[in-house]
Image (cartoon, rainbow, N blue to C red; front, side):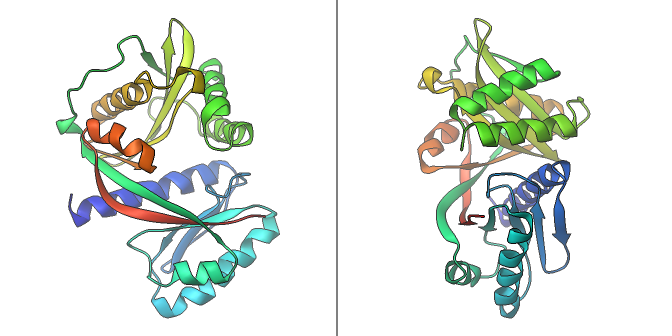
Length: 260
């Protein structure tokens, strides 16, 4: 993958968090130096610095400004360090009291090269088009994603505020087995790039290939909407699953978090 792919990943990821933050009633800053959003999430991951293009000499002041902005909202926050950021924020963030949340692999796949691998055929994937399906989506996230109910409730409320119309850059999916909802995924389109987010399988339904199957189907839907590149962030345990679908690691990002 090229430098252009890295730029597309960063652009999609930044707009993903900014979009959710705006729907959550964000306090947002976006200028030539930095972009951040404080969108009311109880999870620091979503209240985030998503871009920093300032010279390194400005990093210390910007870290201080971000650290000081969070207490005004009594919310946790984070700084997502990617290759496009200056090199010194990691040290400065640790000195400012942020915790090192570890690395995440940024991966990309050409959708035209979507791997033809066996899928869990018993999983029936449908778009989320009404509040009932969105509630199923929320329940699956509650059971098995991130920080559980408090994250799932905020995410579902944001998606309800954004709306579930087919012309939205957001599309959400629920996977069912015999009408039992067991898996989720969402896509977020920026031009021809489809970011894949909130891939989750209910804990009691794992190790049956449902995560790969719903990701595969989400990519197929994105292709029909004009996407040519799929991008996502993966923990080390998920990389092999995504590699089977044709994804390759483009770069690693590093997360720093500050509790409220």
